[in-house]
Length: 228
Image 1 (cartoon, helix red, strand yellow):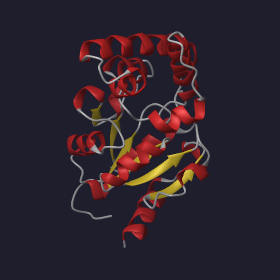
Image 2 (cartoon, one colour):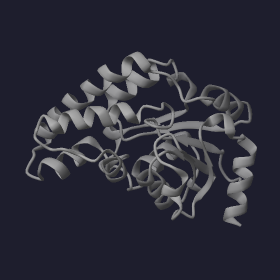
Image 3 (cartoon, one colour):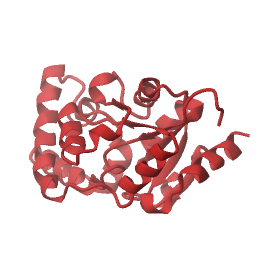
Image 4 (tube, helix red, strand yellow):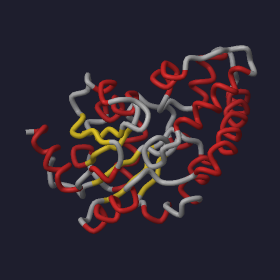
């Protein structure tokens, strides 16, 4: 890691800040079952987690969907997700203590998510976390979802940090790949997939079950060792 810009932690939201991917999966399965498609949950997650809703809709329902049609379908699915997850909304174990330590160490904090604005509001405002972040970038801010690096690069820019000084927190392979393409190191949370699912990535500096297992300065030290 360099010291030419402030250090930053950039957090994916779904499956990272909140351990909610089971509820997203339930809503996707119900959404597609209504349309006669039966999906295998793990394969669907690997193929789609981090992609934007309109990208997923077109992949599974046809490239002919207009922007308006895809947006309407996405809102139907996300509304169902919010209904399912609302009674369970909570931060991932150790998250609030971890970001408090990071802020005390002068680390900038950002969110970079494929979620639409309504889901960002639902999560960050529902948990009163928005005020903790220096920057937020979501699906409405970039044209392409993960594994493209766009949302991570924008979050780092808004946080005033260079990619080399930013560490991404992710739970999905497409997100870790997006971090790699952005020139960023990544920390994996095994909230949804096992550590073995990330074996191919050389930008992963730590793997943990939740934030209680992570140390702020140790992560930057690990990133510096990998970069050296």
